[in-house]
Length: 382
Image 1: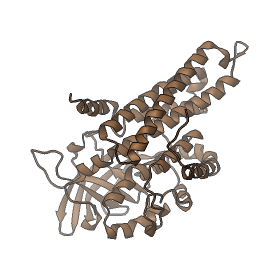
Image 2 (image 1 turned 45 degrees about the horizontal axis):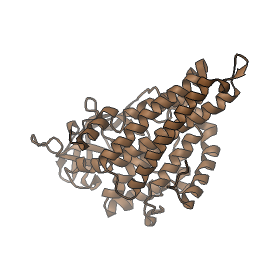
Image 3 (image 1 turned 60 degrees about the horizontal axis):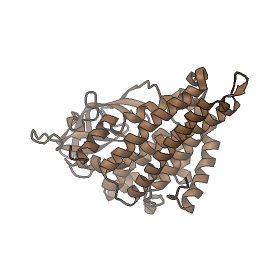
Image 4 (image 1 turned 90 degrees about the horizontal axis):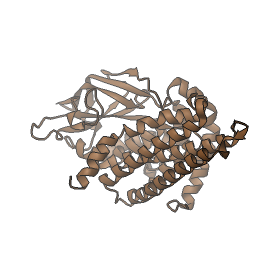
């Protein structure tokens, strides 16, 4: 079906991104996977291209474009070429909105030029050992001491934490036994602050190019000037950006499912089985037809949600529906595609194997499928 959510400007941006990925990413991607991270230079190159600063106001070196559709184009074009730029996506889609919404004038002047240029890399540290999706259970503490907070605690599963210059840490500044959600605060910990250390780089089964680490905070003195927003308001801040964060996962899921379909269609046309093209078998046709229908349905749902997000009308419950449907569809689609590769599909030299491994996390991060169902059920009055 014809999509209608993009303008000529978005399509021009698409061409720019497509050329960059083909030239600067695809030839090096295998090496980056082995290294387990993206090189810093990619962020700087994307900064020079204007990608890192799309949403940052012009006075700080950005373009001032408050339009999530550009982020969608970036994800679609990376998936089309069978690669991912996970930590770039996290910085632009998940972390930058907190800086844009809650940074004061001094913080903007201090950080925004580097964010726009791609020379300042970021991470957000929410998850702790034992908390998972239960953000109200956060135990990392931040105790006020004059013009600083003293931060102690540990975080895990932190995307981009290995190279991050700025880490937004969700810490507990007060306790209210009657309201577990109260008393959480966003503090920006900077690389090099005494007591801040990086632990293990975690060995994941998929998204190998996206570093995921453990972080530790041992009496880290964080200036009050590094607080984002008001003290004790972090839970509401986190909830405000969750619809976009979940949409980001859904966008990637649909784009990668489409990539799996495209690469499988190409494969079955070339693969010979029993003296015939694999594409000539009825089972092959039926399987790929079913996948194509599911991807199309998910794309239609996603495009409507993208429009509502851009217009400021997307509810948390609707974002949960989109994430649930798109990620579950991705799992089914990639699995069916891999099956058509036979044993070759299990070999990492074939992109379908990477797509399969990468897909598994989408039903877990940014809220598990089970959490999405809880949110949807509540919206139904259940």
